[in-house]
Every structure is written in structure tokens, then in C-alpha cells.
Length: 520
Image 1 (tube, rainbow, N blue to C red):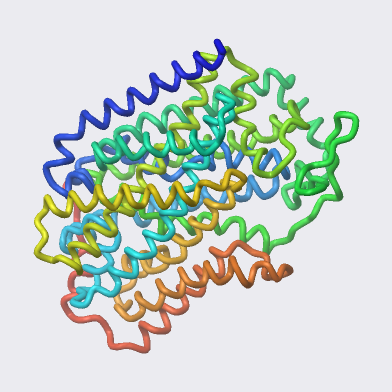
Image 2: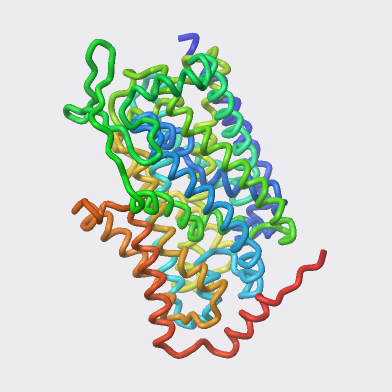
């Protein structure tokens, strides 16, 4: 009981700080929907970088990635990390500054659907509606993955049923996002990015020391077929989805080798960044575009260290506790197991606040962006154009509550594998918004018809490939983001070339953004 009290103290301290941040920005957030949804474009470079990465790296960074490495070794986890790192850097390098400028020039857009609709000078808001609906669908799934993570965290350390703990976490996230909006979310994400980073490093160093050093970890891992292969994955031997153990030794079958197609498929995780609303919105919200170079450096370094440390925490965990986590879903608790095993309860509670930080920093972004998609784009943009700013703000908060309820219902399934849930939503956003975002920013000839066709194709193909095509196996067993992204690009180009070129107004605005010069 003493351990649990100390966990509660550590978590309460953390939660209290986050709530204080929410109240700190409550008054400013309530001044306008612009402040509530994008913070009045007032973020500094460090907050922009850390908030973007923390809101992106949800519970899958501290639970999903280590769990994947613990379950089947280095191969898939490390190629995923490489893809994400490349995508992070390229997104900051090519998209960030152009989007910051274009979103301001194109009607001072404060949401991604707003920007895309304004970019093509829509009268009938078809792009806006499609974009908002896809955001609502995929962010409900995304938020659910975060609620699963926090529910698992609380139920594991407090030995309480999963569902009530998941609901407690969901209520906490909703309360402070409801109060403080984008500024509270961004400020707390900055703090949470630091906590996540420190938690990963501390557990990694403690794990290496406990295991006897990196050489000892590697030597033991080599005994598992395929566990340290860059071009293969280990295969736990399962009976009824539980790994077989005999005399304290977990059983593995022959390693499965993979070829170039699998590597390209796994690297394609990086393509998702070009369509991630929670990251793109941070680009739009920075106060001084010239400071994005600083943000890019901070974000890339944070991402590189965090991802690869997370992978090796999974490897270390399999070395130290080979038989403790015998299902794919339970393997995602390895970070929790290491934290509670290495540290005194109070310190362990603070370390595990990293999981809470990862979960909250993502779910608040997801809820806020999904709420804005409905309130700003559908409610104000289509259903009630005469709505006042206060009415839009009120609708944002109502929508946030509704989406949180839907996400909580999805999260009722305790055995969900966080990595798989996130991968589906990630593919959805990457294929729906990534291609059209790139073409909108860098190709003058793209048309409204091409944009609509590309978005519907990308989002629809993710669902189709995941549910009907990928289960066929063989060459079709590739990450759904890759074929959906490529097909969306092809459709955008073909339809744009087959339809009337954009108006002079649209092309002149494109040239204005392209030739925009920033003052130093």
C-alpha cells in the first residue's frame, strides 16, 4: 500500500502542474476562438518544437515502440524509427515555413481544413467538409489509443480494473483541454516533452546498468533467432496468443527474414508526417517563421534520441524480464515494468509520469483539432455561417466532450495493441492530408478537383487496404500508408492535369507565397 501511495503522490504532483497550466491560459483562451484553437500564432521556437514532437509521439513512444522491440526484436522497430526520423526532418525542412506563410496569406487560416479550402478559393466547401470528416474519424481512433495507454498505466501500477482507470485518465485530459485550449496544450506539451525525454534516458541508463552493460545485452539477445536482425524479425511461439515458456525460457520459432519491400513499407511511416494535423498546426502557430530553423534542430535531435532509446529499452527489457510479458498487448507494459523494478516508488511514479505525459500531450492535441474541425469548419463554415465567435468557441468545447466520449468507448477494449491502433490512424492522416499538403504548397497547377479526388482516394485506400487487401498476405502485406499515399499522389496529378487550371487569383497567391521574403 505504501508503494501505491507514493505512486499517487508523484502522479498527483504532475497532474496538478498540468491543471495549473490549463487555468493559467484559461482567460486568454476564452477571449476568442483564434486564441483557443491556435493560440493567436504566438508560439516561440522551443515551445513549437517540443509541443509538435510531444503531441506527435503519443503513448506509442514509451509503450508501443518498446513493446514492439520487446516482442519481436530490433528489425521492424528500428526501421520504423528511421522512417519517423527522416519524416520529421524533411517535414520541418520543407513544409514548416511554407505552410506558416501560406496559411497566413490564404485567409489567415487557423485549421488544416480552413487552409486547404482557402488555398483553392472554395465557394462550396467540399474540401473543407471532407477534411473535417476525416479528422473527426481518425482523431477519434487516435485519442482512443491514448486513453488505452493511460488506462493500462493506471491499472498496472495501482492494480485496479482497466476501464475505471481509463475513464479517469480521459476525464483529466478533457478537463484541462476544455479549460485552456491550444496555449495550455502547447505549454504543457513543452513540459511533457522534457519529461518524456528524461524518463526514457533514465530508464535506458538504469536498464543497461542492471543488465551488465550494452555488450551483455547484445550477447543475450543474439540467442533469440532474429532478435537483433536488421532484415528480419523474431517470432514468439504462441498458444492461444500467449508465448510458450518452458523452464523459465520463452520459446521462439525460426526468424522471418524480410526484403526491400518490407523495409520501404516500414520506412513509409515517415510519409505520415506530411499529413499530421497536430504537427502542421504547430507550424502555423509559431510567431516568427524565421525561428523555425531552431525548432527544426531541436525537434530532430529530440526525435532521434527518443526513438532509438525507446527501441533499445525494449531490447533491454527482453533481456532482463524474458517471461514477464507473454502477449503482444502486455509487452507494451515493459516501460512500466522496468520503472517499477528499478526505482523507489516515488521516483518510479515520476518516471512513469513520462507515459502520462506522452499520452496527455497527444490526446489533448487530438481532441482540440477534432473539435476545431467540426466547430470552425462544419458548424461555422457550413451549418451556421452567422455564428458569433463565442458560439464557435462554445461549440468547440461541446464537440470536444462528444469526441472524448466516442474515443473512450473505442478504448474500452483493454487488449488493443497501441502500436497497431496508432499505425492505422497515422496512415489515415498521412494518406489523406500528406499528398495534398505537399502539392498545395509546391505545385501551382494542382486543382480543387485534384485535391478532392486525392483526399478521398488516400483516406479511402487506407481503410480498404487495411481491411480487405493486406490480409491477403504476400506482396500485399505492406503498411497501408505506402500504397494509399502513392495512389493519392497519382490521382491528384492525373485529375489536376485533366481539369481546368487554377484561376489567376489562385496562381498569383501561390507565387506571392513562393517569393515571400522574411525580414530578419
